Image (cartoon, rainbow, N blue to C red; front, side, top):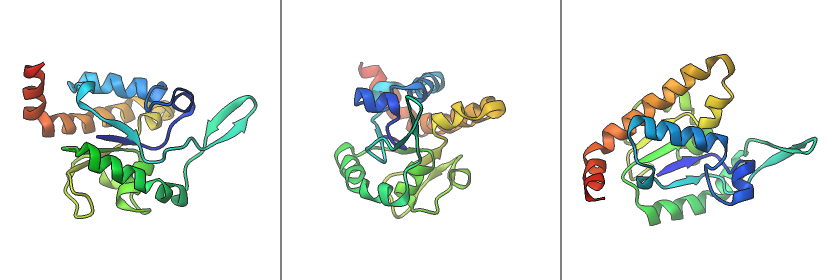
Length: 167
């Protein structure tokens, strides 16, 4: 189960998670590391698109702690329904939704975490939109995302290969 921040403009318009530019990047990296998108459940920690106007465009605005907590009930229901083998938190908002307001991606990323507040193993990584906004460091941030999703693939390896063989 992959949990992002909130819907973006394109996701809000289409009513589906990860269909905008960040979703395109996520799908490319997922394929690159050898994961099958059909094995993934994609959702967001915050269920509404928080934005501010900029001319005729709607610009993303980071959800605050109150908005993250208000959407917690839906995320918990999704976790109970999906019962994922591994939880992948994409970005700071998703990390805060699961680990609390002081969670930091830079401190949590790079390994599989077994934490008492979460019933399944967790991998924290960058949100693909952070990669897209990284400017001169885009290649480095993308490499970090690839590295973290490789950890996901390796953790789920045998189970994913068994599913692929049944297809």
